[in-house]
Amino acid sequence: MSGPLKGIRIIEFAGIGPGPFCGMMLADHGAEVIRIDRNTGPNRTIGALSRSRKSIVLNLKSPDGVALARRLVKSADGLIEGFRPGVMERLQLGPNVLLQDNPGLVYGRMTGWGQDGPYAQAAGHDINYIALSGVLHTCGRAGEKPTPPVNYLGDFGGGGMMLAFGMVSALLAVKNGAAGQVVDASMSDGSALLSAMTWGFLEAGAWEDERGVNRLDTGAPYYDVYETKDGKYVSVGAIEPQFYQLLGELTGLKDDEDFIRQNDRGRWPAIRKKLTSVFKEKIRDEWCTVFEGSDACFAPVLSLREAAMHPHNIARKTFATVDGKTQPAPAPRFSGNEHDASRPAPSNGADTRSVLIGLGYSEEEIENWRESGAIQECP
Image (tube, rainbow, N blue to C red; front, side, top):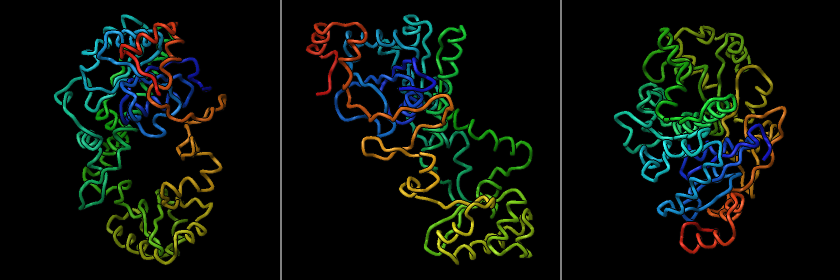
């Protein structure tokens, strides 16, 4: 793979969700990511999250398997693991061992609650992590229960993306002469960080600590979604006065006595009611024609399948086809590096032999390990 991380080797201990997302990010931008799987069953990660990897199957209950893992990590710049705290230590693959083997190693740890704290050993999922960080409380409409935003904020924004950023930061530090270190990425911590602007508003007195009554949480009628005549939806985000004025012009409400009072909260219910009525007068595509190219901060609400077919996304190559399947393309873009086409997710153990040969092991040694069960290969 080409990209700004070309020449970096990452060892990823197979997991689900945010750890593989971090591995995908690093692989997308040129790192060689070798995933250590523990069996040759079906892939444990989904589609795009497993792309552009190599896969080796090691039996980590075998002394030989653990020794091979240590040898592999010794050759690497970074490591990703997403087990509960203490699991890697029990496998004799914790940071105290591996950083002694490889003092420049960046040891990336992905958990829900972090490596310490009262919840550290408790099970959880995205919904729980963003609940504890306060983020879930902000998602939803006034008078209604919180609405979980799929698992974007905990697993991926606050988890995998934060770990990728942390690892690249630590790798840069190593390049500049620092020692290797552990990156402790917690989804609860990361999702809290994603709410930094909201906290700024709250502490400045510009945000109410309740759901659905603020500018950016559907409290304001000019920052919301509206149903169209055909049962589809459009989004409006006309916060700035000049954009709000344009919204009024294009909806025919510019001179309405309620509409002109943009930030009079007492008028918000009336403005919302009028926008709701207006948007139901046309189908979604007709509204797209009305707003096309304007600065009214408008966009249609597209389904996943529709998004892949939108002209802007096609022009930007926002989505790609990998092994016949549609996936989001790597992001962001770099002016100095062209991305290679993403490779399909490997079958577990597809690269066991080639990776070990690359480490200098002989065919005879590899065959002995295969027969003993220390390694497995994809049939």
